[in-house]
Amino acid sequence: MIPRKKEKVIMEEEKPKGLHHVTTFAITLVALSIVVAVGIYEMNERKLMASNIESAITKGIDPLTVRCSYAKDYDTICIAHAAANGHK
Image (cartoon, rainbow, N blue to C red; front, top):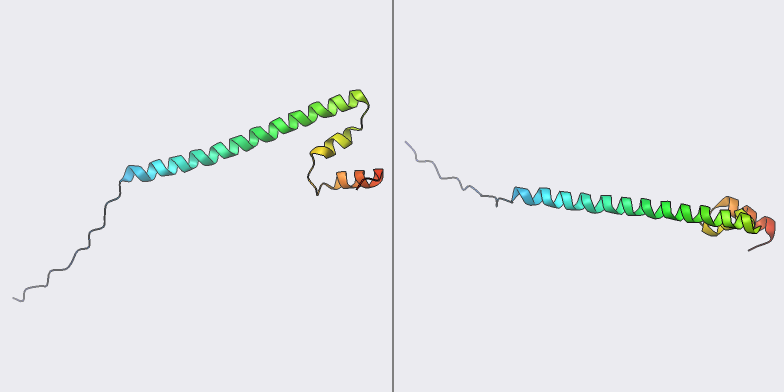
C-alpha cells in the first residue's frame, strides 16, 4: 500500500455572517433616507411655488414669470416666454 500525500487544505477565514446583513441594512437605510429627503424637498418646493404664484395673481404679476423663476435653464416654455417678452 502506497501512502497518499496529505493534501493541503486552505482554510478560508470565516467572516461574521451578521456583519454582512448589518452593512446591507445600513446602505439600504441611507439610500431610502436620500430618496425620502429629495421627495420632501421637491414637495416643499412645489408648495412654495404654488403659494408664490397665487400671491402673484393677487398682485397682478404674470404667474408664468413666477413659474419661470423656479424653472431649469432648458425649460422651453420659459425660454419662449422670455423671448416673447424681450428678456435675455
